[in-house]
Length: 337
Image (tube, rainbow, N blue to C red):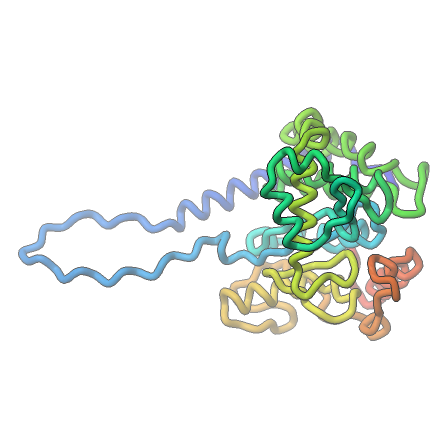
């Protein structure tokens, strides 16, 4: 959807704060690292010590969240800018999760005018080098401007995999770009037109338009989109709609509307993976404060929502999303702006 974003000074302050948080996390990691013991004099040769179990790094403990989407899908925009943003912004959540977008969705891959979307063929294309990439093209569900938007978002993440750096720009694109059926002034324009403005507003001087544009206009964009196609094709079970989320490689199952419980699902996954615990009132000992802020249940009217007969993002009609968000608000879940 459309709307005017916050000013550059506020964005820069927010970006500085997130970078300081990232630095503090790195400092905590360094402080927690084991230090070698000082050597001692021994009168006898000790028996060799048993090999210690390999240490699990904080990054290995994190829950990996991946959102499979497309840049002009109305529901993808809503989920990215409302649900994902809220989860990432909740206190301590970035310490227990990694987040990544896979912009491809229901697009199709063509080579020399022939559609190729089988996993094995896509893998061969990626291994084929630049010559093969030159003859690859993409057809997106919502048209060429969506393919361009997918390329911009893929390049931003490729150049800046740190979520603290890339997500504010991606959030801006998803918030300002026109979704299917929209046009200015209700929105800011196609994703490819909105992206440079978002980079200048939220890139904090780290994400630069020139570098991202060079990626979008060069062979790397085709390679990244092909990787996205391959990753999407390998989903097991296959996606039934977009947005489609996986948590540590697995889809949570159930109704499409259950994506609005993403915060609870991430906290449950982290507790089971690292704490051998289940949640009580949304939290457990060892979980961040943010876990206690998420809704634990959907309103009953949303539990049995189903995707439309054509699959894809049919279920995301604006009216359905308005009902969903309204019901969640009525149940006491106030989405953050």
